[in-house]
Length: 291
Length: 145
Image (cartoon, rainbow over all chains, first blue to last red; front, top):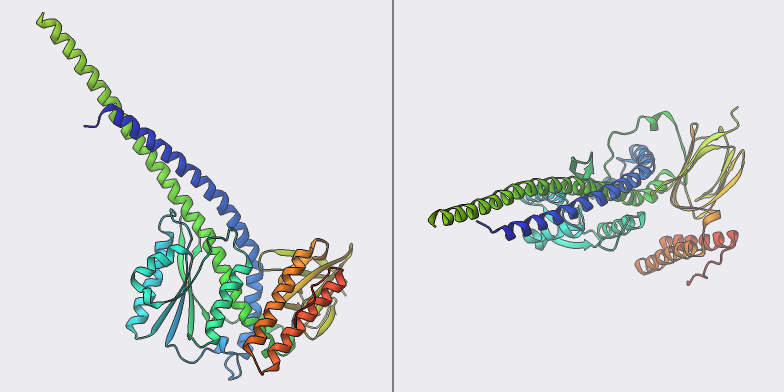
C-alpha cells in the first residue's frame, strides 16, 4: 500500500504528463493544418504533371526508343525500396505501419530470390529496419534539419535515386509512405516510381492532339526525371500530414488515458486518506475506553 | 472568338496564378512563343526565362525555370519547377538559381568527358540564367566555365 505522499506525487507527475501530451496534441493539430495546406497546394502540379506525362507515356511507350525510366531495364532482379518515415517518435503506429509494409515486401522479394536494396528517409524507419536488414542498406537521407519539406528536398532524394539508377544499381524502385486519409487513418502505401507506372492512360490525351516542341521523346526524357522528383515530393507531403495526424490522435489518446489515471489515483488517494482518519479515530476511541 | 483564355501557373509547392489572360509569352526550349486564345495545342519544355502574362489589367512577369507548358483549347498551364514573380525576386533567389545551374554544369562536365551533348545543354542553361539576370537587372555572377 503506497503512502499518501507517494500517491500525491504520483498524481502530480501524471498531471504534468497530461499537460505535455495535451500541448503536443495541439502543436500537432496546428502542424497538421499546415501540412495539409501544403499537400493541397501541391496537388494541382502533381495532377497536371501526371496527366501530361501519362499521355506522353501512352503515345511513346512500348517503342524501343522509350527512355529507360519508362520502359525499365527489362529485368526485375534488383529492387530499391525507398522507405519514408518520420524523424521523431511519439506518433502512434505511424512509423511501425510503414515499416511493416516495407518488411512484408522485403520478405516477399527475398523469397523470390531477388536482391533488395534499402534507402531510408527519416530516422525512425532506419532504426527499425537496421536491426534486421542492415546488410541491405545502401543509404539514408537525413531530414532532421528540415522543418518544412520543400521541393528541393524531394529533388535531392530524386537525384540520389536517379544517380543510382543511371549507375545500374537497381532495376525497380518503390517508395513506401503513408497516405493521409484522415486524422485517425493513414494508409501505408507502396508506389513504384521506376520504371514509371501511370494509372490508367488518360482518355483526355486522346481527345486533343498536341504539337510537341521539341520532339515527344525529348520532352519525355526531360520530364521523366522531374516526374520522379514530383512523386517523391507528393509522397513526402502526404507523409508529413500523416505523421502529424497520427501524432495528434496518439496524443489525444495519451491525454485521455492520463485523465483516467488521475481519476483512479485520486479515488485511491481519498480512500487511503479516509482509512488513515478512521484508524486515528479508532485509536483515540479505544484509548479513551481503556481509561 | 474569345479574347481571353484561362492561364494557370503552378510550381510544385503552390499555385502562383490562375486567371484569364489575353496572351502569354512562354520561354520555350526551342524559342520564345506567345500563346493567345485559339492557339494550336502544344506541349513544350521550358528554358530558364521570363514568362509574361498579359491580362486585362496589365502584364505580370515571372522568372521560371524547368518544367513545361501545356497549351490546350481549355487553357494554358505552365508547370515550372521554380517560379518567382518578378516583383518579388531578390538577389538571393537569383544566386541560388545560378548556383543550381552551375552545379548542373559542373556535374555534366565531370560525368560526360567526351560527350558534348549534356555539357552543351548545361552551358546553355547557364547562359540562359545569365540572360535572365541581365534582363531583370539583377547581377548574375559570371559563370565559371
